[in-house]
Length: 60
Image 1 (tube, rainbow, N blue to C red):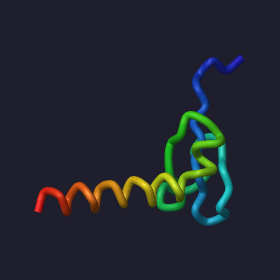
Image 2 (image 1 turned 90 degrees about the horizontal axis):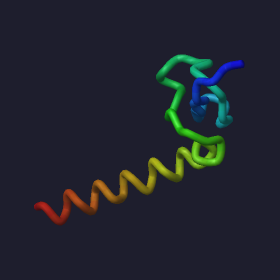
Image 3 (image 1 turned 120 degrees about the vertical axis):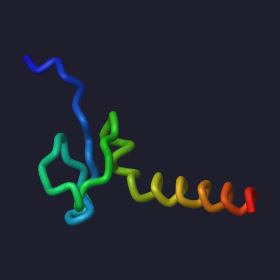
Image 4 (image 1 turned 90 degrees about the vertical axis):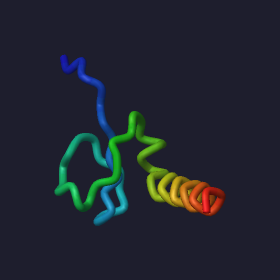
């Protein structure tokens, strides 16, 4: 039995969640600890980018 934790990745080429590193790194977002988070990868990236922009604007 495999006791290692699973890593979930969002494949930007297929827009599907995959378990493990199945495609080249340029097509993967992750890793995520669960399927649901990986499925929300694009939303998570958008939210993080917005937070970073806002933080940069406060610093300027």
